[in-house]
Image (cartoon, rainbow, N blue to C red; front, side, top):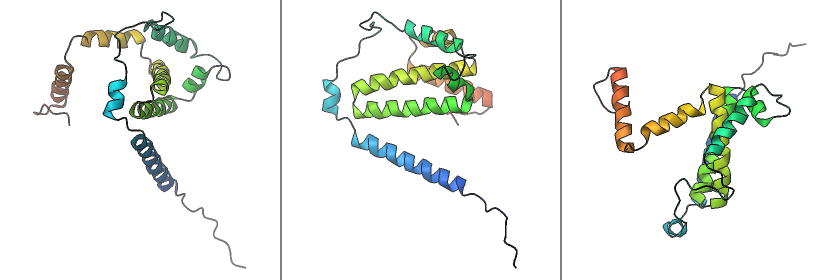
Length: 177
């Protein structure tokens, strides 16, 4: 009786992952392409208001309160708190979830689906705060950085970052490598 070869065959997981990733990208592209907003639809959208409170009187301070809630859930029971469950899964899963929500948000933006964009934007902000808590970033640090950039041209600010990066890398170019 011949002995069977019991050696395990190498799994084709990298190929399967690459194929799944390619399929996901194709699906997202197809959904985005199918939902492209025409310029006329954009013109029909109401102009955004700056720092307008929501109908309930809420302002961006709700983000500070939400950040506080997520911070308080770091040590909570993962079976009773969604934030605690996300944080318990580790940085990679927290970042993955943020990325998924960001993609969903951009799909709704391109589709011109205003109500879904609002809902997905709230999801993105929540998952961004979870990512900050996971990384030990305080909300006030981000607010301070935004305040520092206030009134600075985006073009000038980006050019400043490119110069700083070039100096740190010791390259003679001002372009980001």
